[in-house]
Image 1: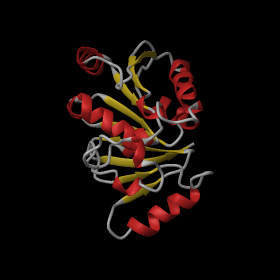
Image 2 (image 1 turned 30 degrees about the vertical axis):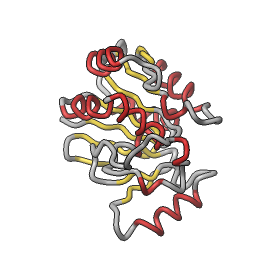
Image 3 (image 1 turned 90 degrees about the horizontal axis):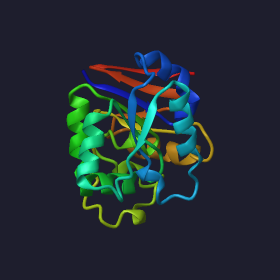
Image 4 (image 1 turned 120 degrees about the vertical axis):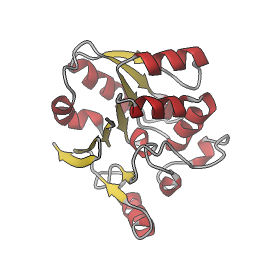
Amino acid sequence: MKQLFLASSFSDVLPAFAEFVAHPKGKRVTFIPTASVVEKVVFYVNAGKKALEKLGLVIDVLELSTATTEEINNKLRNNDLIYLTGGNTFYLLQEMKRTGADQIIVDEVAAGKLLIGESAGAIVTAPNIEYVKGMDSIKKAPGLANFDALGLVDFYPVPHSTNAPFQKIAQKIADTYSSSLNLMPFSNHEAIIVHGEKIKIERC
């Protein structure tokens, strides 16, 4: 059964995650900070790690831009959960496609592995990420051939919808795409939880 926990700011919705995940203590998380590599503001990476550790989860970092094919395959397939941090959505997708991690993640989620996506990590679960061009710089992903993403959900997450400094761009995304895409805006204190065919927004 498909299990996704999508957050704008993971540390702010930890209580909702603690309720959603069963017996987290001791489970290993493949923690992928790749989206943050090209960003200057990265405080959320450590905040996410600390939040996971607070629940007793064991973090196994996987940096896609430097990892070997064997390392990517082993960690994604053998660990218990997958965590995609925030950062630049286009760079994250570029590196996932370049390394083949995208297809492994799709396969693992289809097999029931829980995926946590934070901000950019939530956006890449959509069918396509072109709609966030105003939120992230495409220039940071010169090797990205197209915007087709993981397609794990049939909606389009819009993180930080009411939070600074993203309110205006989130509103612009809504104005531009709400008539053509199934947008799902959510704030830093909300999480989108996908459990099989059920989708709900949990507030903290």
